[in-house]
Image (tube, rainbow, N blue to C red; front, side, top):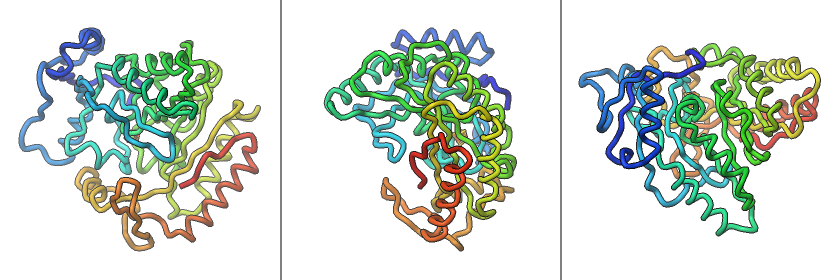
Amino acid sequence: MSDIFVPKVVFVTKSAISYEACEKLVDAFREAGSIIIRGSPRLPRGLDPRSKYVRAKSIVVLSADKSHSFLRCKPSADFQINLVRGCPGFCEYCYLQTTMGPAPYIRVMVNVDDILDRARQVCLERLPEETTFEAAAVSDPVPVERYTGSLRAAIEFFGREGLGARLRLVTKFTDIDSLVGIAHNGSTRIRFSLEADEFHKRFERGMPSTGRKVQAAKKLAAAGYPIGFLIAPVFLERGVEPYKRLVMKLRGNFSDGLPDDTTFEFVSHRFTERARALILSRHPDTSLPMSEKGRQLRTGQFGYQKYVYPRGELRQVKQEIINTVREILPEGRIDYFV
Ligand code: SF4
């Protein structure tokens, strides 16, 4: 996948047309070469699940978000703030497999100002408590940012408003130049999602390498953003060695030290029955470890059951990886390992 994402088609829904921002978005996508169609998104009939999945990920849908509340987002933040939903990537384990339905179009919200107004209200109600929003809970918002500017608007909003409000986002993409040089006031943390090389090659085909993501992270750190690395998913099938190598690689890339206040988050691999069925229909040749053997069933934060690594095994690997980070990258801070 090229660094620059150009959607093949952009659908402009009825809910989006009345917003002033819609016209600008349409112009930006048209200029990039996307075909613009008015109406609800649709795909040709008779596509198999994989073709449907692939086609949908090349389509952007301009919509308005009319919801009045923000969903919780543990452990990364207090709430989700969804300016975009979906992602053009094809990571086989993607956590969005189940949440985006059979046709995971990339939905771009045209009413960013309304969403930020609602965020302001929530922050005011929670004062003096600090409120953190995660902008990548149901998307990777970076590939469409060059057209939307919605992250920029949110970053400037959180930088300007105070209110004990913070923004976080995580990405696997490197098209971040438009986020450099804007007034973030240190209120937004941008993290890059990394994977051990051998799993990156197998399960994240076409996505930027660790080296490219580190270069992008350095650029943002030089622009004054707090940065971080989300290592996810952590697969235990090959033990800790792949992740030790990843930590060593980071050390090599930051031989003069990590930028101040660099954070680490770790999320171990998990899957639901529904995700497994969807992944197998979209990636029939996948070698993702998705056997229930060697896993335990656990109930997740939204009440669904998922297969996780057994507690004892996870505890041991977690400790080894944490020890490695503390030894090799002692200036980094580990926020959580789940
Ligand atoms: S980059 Fe993230 S959101 Fe996009 S396909 Fe990969 S895992 Fe899913």
